[in-house]
Image 1: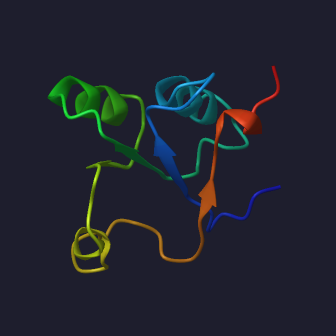
Image 2 (image 1 turned 135 degrees about the vertical axis):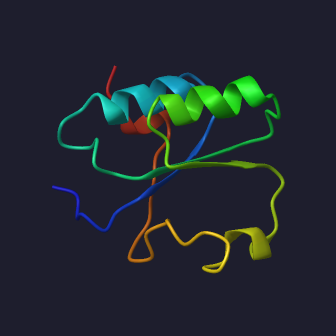
Length: 93
């Protein structure tokens, strides 16, 4: 069982299972959907940002990003208690 303080950084461009599908699986799973997901990507199209937010992502950061854009003063809605990272290998096929 994941701790409620867990959150997720998720890249859109990943091998095997992309970030959109991974986000859909997280948000479609009752045991995981409470986890805030911060999408990160080098994909700069506004359609990608909108798609992620509509799918349930908490926020979206374009890569590369710098530390100041991720500080507490610029990201007050992000949880501060923990972090989990997910990859395509997290999901069984």
